[in-house]
Image (cartoon, rainbow, N blue to C red):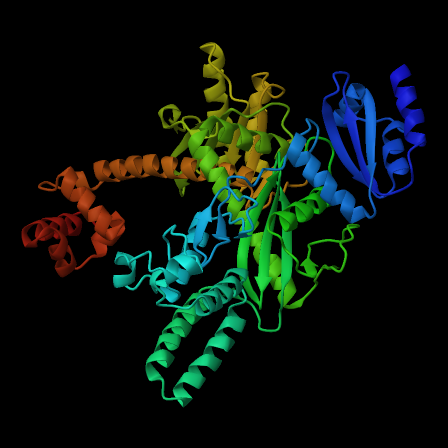
Length: 599
């Protein structure tokens, strides 16, 4: 506590300026970096109130504080971002480094080459990126190479070497992938004009390039230089084809950055759209792992600074899902309510949801146990269960007009159907169609047997039905002394409402929730399993009592008749021609004679 008192006193002495503060542990390791609009107020807030959770743990580790004063709050954001990337403090939000992302390089040399690299170096060359998708970058490079034949050799094409005719053209020249600058086939001025256009394309300013190309094409045509005009037209066609594949929202939108954010169980995800001339030209998703109690506002502010710095974005408008206190010089922060910008924001949010869905699918394949645990934890929270429902049993009754009542039980273990544990039940003590009494019987029989055999009990029982079936099931559990040991719910099919014992109001789960989908899957599987058993028993009963009494009609033929006519009553009323079409004339005559004699 002496250390904390000293730190509290030290915090009070900090300047009231924007800046960055750094926390060090007893071993002089940097464990946390933070930014502040007012250093004194921000750092003091850590020591002026009781902290909880991870922040409390952080405070117990602090042995020293250092700070850096900057001119503006935005400068503090930039410095914080750089320090986190450089030192990776233990208690800071984890930011992925961009060293593995590819860049497009325009080399600083005579007749510049254009290629991709993962290692930008400070040699005077220009780098564009980074590109989160290698496919996106390669598509752009292929377009450039198709329109502009550039050299890819490493020759030193100085003016002196070209004048001395030091080189000869290679195969690339002969197959028209290069204009032959090594032998003076293209001037450096013309080559650099192509490079200038390529830079605009890479930046996403395709409209400007198209405009310039059209102007040059018209001049060539007016001067009757049709071959040159045709060459430019081919470039125009290729560029327009590429542009048509971009997501274009509006010609009225200029350069803007769009950010959306979503939170999963553990991490935050931020989606970035770079929009140029109304078209989305760059997309990137950033994953951030919180370490303390960072809010969505904290995370989004950090992500905006990081992504704009990473992609060297100078857009003067940023579209956001909610207000931020972040101030960026010469930049407007917009939270749209309607219109094209709102549509862009919604598109970014949809991209995030798809990204998260695909990430979860991948994790499910790589680590199925983690997937199961995540779903079970969600079910535990949604249903307010005291423990994880790793073992679930679900019951459903099947009968038609009281005939051949049966029941089915399906099982789910660790969020997966366990078909080897499915069971059928023939109702023994209930006469007629009484779903409540049938449910009471099968629940009692099932768990009375498990108790007698010292078998494993489920954590959760699901019954298909509303309050009536739920009450019947609970009645049996109480008789067996299990009402406090097994959690019980019912699902009413009409509105997919969840009923719980003692609660008069149904629980309405989100229709897209994984919990409801799991319950529905078990219920539907129980329904299918029960109906299959019922049909077998139903058909067997009808065949045995009626059709198999007809001499010359076997079980196979009887099943065929029932499948076609659906009931014995329909068979009795069928015409000779209808029967003949199913079983032939001889059998049709036997059937009609039988029923005419047994009216």
